[in-house]
Image (cartoon, rainbow, N blue to C red; front, side, top):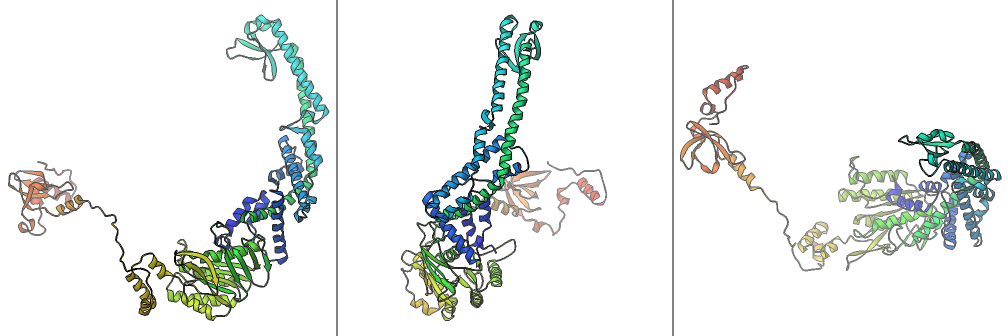
Length: 634
């Protein structure tokens, strides 16, 4: 029995999760359930109130996701060297910790208890500043260390000297050059030399053009600077790794403190998400009691539009522990019981409730049977599903339970369903649980009137507009208004009389006041089925002429015998003296029927087949033969 889905608390959780930032908080929300410890529940409700107050005064908290940084910290603790990108991620999270700490510090000014969590946050300013100073733009900065700064200056000087030497060679050997600029090939600076001038330029051939006419030669004067540059690059790489390992070691050393920071942020994210939900739903903090009383003032379903939702006034536990709600269909009975249970569960999960004021008791379990529950896969009818759910509810119910049931006893014979409904209500009453039940059975209303601890309630209905008002009146039994609604919507008086007579007898028919003059049901022209006449005609023709019928063939007025019945095109085959012809049925008229000319089971092959074909067919029936029957299409 998935209570959360049946009362739509799963949708509230979905809204709640979308307001959290960290994955840890989302996971906690996904698994949250109602609290059974009074002290813990009261603390959770205070946290929700404090979270809402903090957001209303200071705005949205500057929280940030921390899941990626946790993996980075784990790598640092294992001794891996963090990349500049990963170190920048660490710096960004440290900056977020500092902003959140400042946010909470401002909350302390309002004496908000959550503001004092600021003391649990350490922004690790030294580490953040070191990362900011040494890492920039996804790389180790030139000024990360004095040695790295000097190495990179020397590298720039070497590259410039290499370029100068190459340009000097190009000027001095202008006639040997294939182009007017030097270029880099395989990391070496080269001059483009004509193939025939290869021996005139001192240096090493590094590459050549696709045609082979141009050689790219590294001048000997530039080669020594290239060697120096390679040594400087090795020094640069060593110094970069030294800086990265130093920052990684600082990060690993700060990891335990950062893990504490993240735990605090995730805890506050969970609390503040409850505050955000309270603001979004325009909710209020409920009072909690252990006296088995529920009082809701101006309650509304949290998933319904507040602008159109009609506030519900509800109370149970003082005079009765069970309420039986009756009233017309679409009167809001199901929404009412869902609203009550949903607000109670939200309160016991530490959330604010969508009520003007609420005093809610703690419940040990929430049980319900809502919807038809029909399951084709399990071969369960509506009634079977109801009974299965009800038995499960009765097996779990106790004096600290809260139970709701919709359309109790429905889905079967009314008399038997009414008896089962009363039996279920009696079991619920004996358990001492708080329960809300909707029904249409008048006998159940009577049972509530004469039974202690159970009260009737009704959902009001505007008879002028034929619309429910969604107001619950406790202490009064409702009526279904089915006859009244049907009358107002145009059901003929004769039909209404038949319905009232079947339900309450002839006396009720005489007492009923009809709302309109009698009128029958106005029939509307509907669609018609179009039949294919040709199919009907062909079906009739197929039986009009039979094998052996003697027919008159027009316009020659010759007598023939039918040897092939009418096909789908209206053509039949007729044997005339000396030949067989195909002819349309319209040119043929029955002369003498076959049953008047031939006895039953007459073998027409005597007339229609040749002697040779009949012999061959006889042989085929007795043995294998290579002879074939010749078709006569003359």
